[in-house]
Length: 142
Image 1 (tube, rainbow, N blue to C red):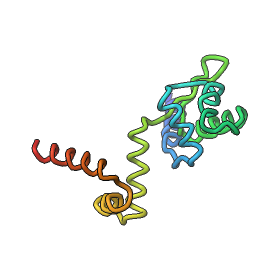
Image 2: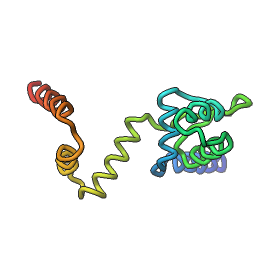
Image 3: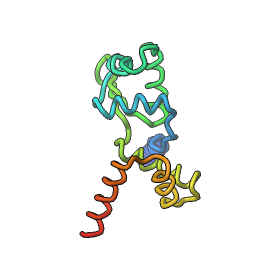
Image 4: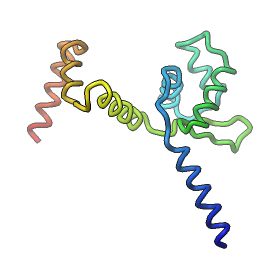
């Protein structure tokens, strides 16, 4: 009994370790966007969807990238059918939040205010500024 408990604990530790993911590359983010927008899909379906924006990508490349992403914990894989079905391991918002936290820490010394100020100076249209102001006004009135 003690031996099987130890084996189960080691297996759980291995699974938990796999959940800790690295940051996705630009190409991997493209595949994640397809899965977030369209839901779980086979490699063939992901390839069909990614070809709209990147017609040069072949199906073997997509499959290999999905396999790597799965082994790194970025994707889950349902192996119950002949064609495996891949899905994002994290919701889009959670991954974006984690990436943003890391970016703020590295690029802005942990200051969210500095990030916002930089974005407002260079990357926000007048229309977007108005929408942001309405959001802020709504938050302060509640």
